[in-house]
Amino acid sequence: MKIIDHPILGEVVLKKNIRSRNINVKITAEQIRVSLPFFSSYDDAISFVESKIEIIEKKRANLASKKRMFTIENPTRTFSFEMYLVPLPQKDYLRITKGNKIYITFPGTDNPLSFRSQKIFRGVFEHLLRKEAHRLFPDMLKQEANRCGFEYKDLRISSAHTRWGSCSSDKNINLNMYLLTLPEHLIRYVMLHELCHTKFMDHSSNFYKLLDEVSGGKSEEYKKELKGYSIG
Image 1 (cartoon, rainbow, N blue to C red):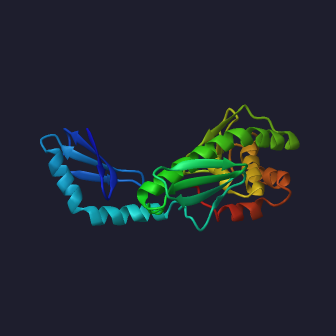
Image 2 (cartoon, rainbow, N blue to C red):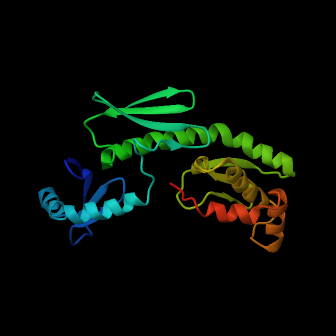
Image 3 (cartoon, one colour):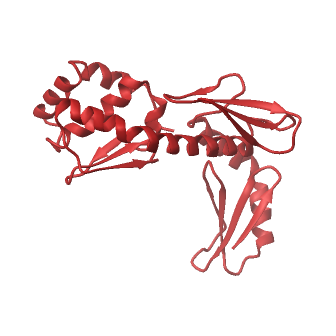
C-alpha cells in the first residue's frame, strides 16, 4: 500500500489487489482509495487518477454538499457550544476555548472551503460533539426516564449517520452525538422516543399513544419538525 498527498485531491490511498483486473477509484468525502491489479505500478495508478481529476472532484463536491459546511460567515451553533472560524496570519490550525465559544484559528492564506480545511474543521467539531454528548446525555436521559417512569439498562453514544437513536431489546439506548445540533425539545423528544421502546419495541398504536402522552401531546408536531434536520 502507498499513500500520497496529492496537491489537488489531498490524501490518495493506493493499494494493490490480486483480484483486481482494472484500476478502480473509490471516492468518499474523506479520501480517495485506488485499487489496482498486482502487476500494475503505482505510477500507472497515479496517472489514471490524474486523468480522472475533474470527475473525482465533481463527485466529491456532490458528496460534500450533503454534509454540513463550516464557514466564516455562519458560526456553527449547537445545544451547548458555538464554533467560530477565524483566519489569522499563522501557519497552523489552532483551537481556543472561551466558555461555550470555540474559536478555530487557521492560516489566512488557506481557503476555508477547501477539502483539507473542511476535514480539519469537521474533525474538531465531531470531537467536541462526542465530548459534549458524553457529558450531557446521561443526565438528560435520566431526567426524562425519572420524570415519566421509564427504566433502561445502559446508554451508548454513537456517531452513525443513519439514525438519531435506537433501543435494543435488553433496554440499552443508543443516542447519536449529532442530537446536539437539534433544539433542546427535539433532543428530549428523541430520548423519549427511545425510552418508549423500553415498553414497546415496535411502532404500534400503543407505542405512539405512550409517546404522545409523555411528550405532552406534541409527538406528531415534533416528529414533523425533526424531519427538517439531517444527521451530519
